[in-house]
Amino acid sequence: MEKNKIRFVLVHGVCHGAWCWYKVKPLLEAAGHAVTALDLAASGISTSRVDEIQTLEDYSKPLLDFLSSFGSDDQEKVILVAHSMGGISAALAADIFPNKIAAVVFLTATMPDTKHPPGYPYETFVPSVPQELLDTVFRSYGTRDHHSLRTVLFGPKFMAKKLYQLSPLQDLELAKMLVRENPALATDNLAGTKTFTEEGYGSVKRIYMICGEDDLMSEECQRLMISNFPPNEVMEIKDADHMPMFSKPQELCALLLEVADKYA
Image (cartoon, rainbow, N blue to C red; front, top):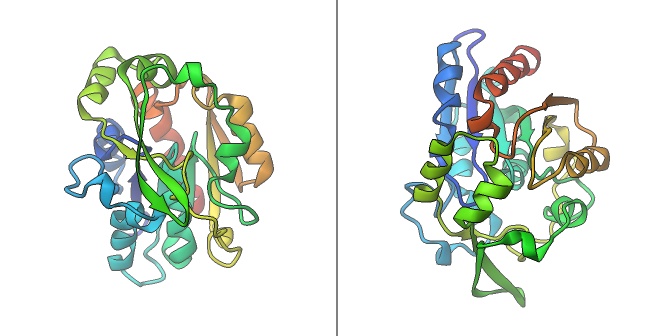
């Protein structure tokens, strides 16, 4: 890999796909970096079906496969950028491939710790208010270890009010066309009960980016996750909603370039 050229690997949140990085990817590439935006299983243009997903590993397989095939040279490490519930998949990847990851950026994301099950931070620090779920739809599709497996599909009203309220209308319309039913990581047992390790995930540098106007995970919730498992650094995009790649792409890119300079 060329000196000072970093590979960013962008991991989307639930119901979304690689498409949600369409503004950020060319900005990072224009700065001279390589960028891979991945579709997790049953997301974006993935041909897998959500009913086939039984484990967190199944859902995260595209990310794990990419890192598995990535060069073993110690000089070649990626920066993972995980949005929202993509933080759980990124933490799993860091636990399995700590030597291939320079840092994980948690972008208003669920950030697991190494003492509790992966879903603990979301379940503990993000209040669930049923009436605010609006037109979001949940569906059961099976059981695993005697726990129900469920899917989630964000509805247009929910996205407009809770996710995209500061984003351009065109990006909300894009999301309405492209979101897909995904495993409901926060509400079922898909993420599993096994904690991530100190030797793996715990050894990787972590940066948390707070989005100050996030209406899904409030700034208070984000700071509680930070206090629960303090990262190496905390950055902030003050006027971003839950979708900073749409509402504040330039500001997000500038912070990611800072991360590349400091941690790669």
